[in-house]
Image 1 (spheres, rainbow, N blue to C red):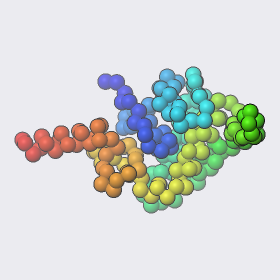
Image 2 (image 1 turned 60 degrees about the horizontal axis):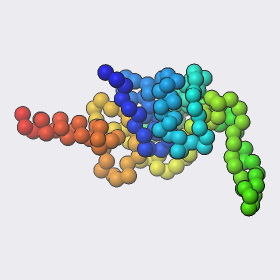
Image 3 (image 1 turned 45 degrees about the horizontal axis):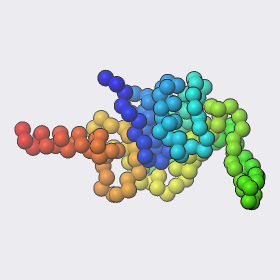
Image 4 (image 1 turned 180 degrees about the vertical axis):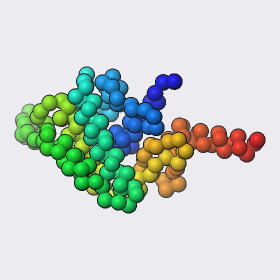
Amino acid sequence: MSAPEPLVGEHLAIDLVNTRPAGADLVGTAEQLAQWLRLQEHRLPETFADPGEPEVRAVQQVRDHVDSALTALRHGERPPESALRGLTAAQAAAPAVRHLVWDGDRCVTRTRREGAVSARLAAVLAEAAVDLLTDPAVDRLRQCAAEDCVMLFVPAHPRRQWCSPERCGNRARVARYYRRHK
């Protein structure tokens, strides 16, 4: 059986945590990370083509920190200090610098990060996590109601129960139908 396709469309930090569905790691190899980055490229400030093992490790480390913080918040607890420090350190490893440039008509700024690709990628993902963790919407974060699903989402509608209507929602409706018609 092949690994599931990455679920995308939530906040970038939630999509990152959702790369670890039950029994799988969807960014466990450089090829898998490259696929996930292609799905997210419209949300990233630069193209992270051809990731290697350093990028895989950096992304997994940020994901672990985000997951740890979100798990604590979902249970009404304080996020672990190690997770908060880890996200801060990831950002500090490749700080964003606003460069003043001339675009032909006026001065504009372009934000760039310096450092190794793995540090820049980790910093971008850690920054997204900080944005999520400080957003009031994090209070609405839910885990999918499907029995075997661990995916997270922020519902746009208060009655939303599943990470995806096509994935878990459809499976739940089919199972409910079979139970009723047995």
